[in-house]
Image 1 (cartoon, rainbow, N blue to C red):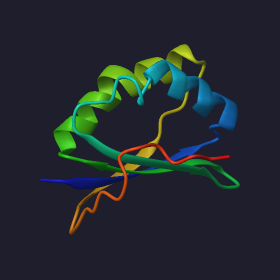
Image 2: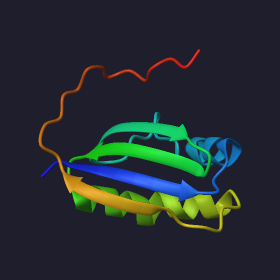
Image 3: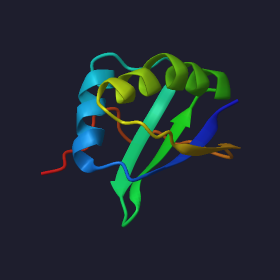
Image 4: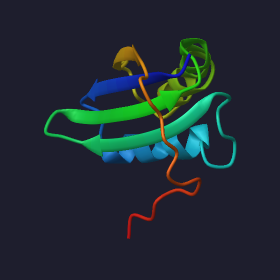
Length: 100
């Protein structure tokens, strides 16, 4: 079942996120089951919304890649995550959106 994962990572900086993003290498080595990733920063830290093919896919990625790589990047905290069953998922693009 496709799920939506919402993550809040208090205190995480854009520099830490960028270092972890490069280390995890989402774009060249897409995690199994990952459908989308959107990240933004608020006054308290990082927020992420992702779609996954299943809870199990996300949990494997979190344990095997995301947390180990963020620790190697010097991040000591862990995110708070919420997972919901998706009602509808529409893929509008398969290419990463340009930020510039």
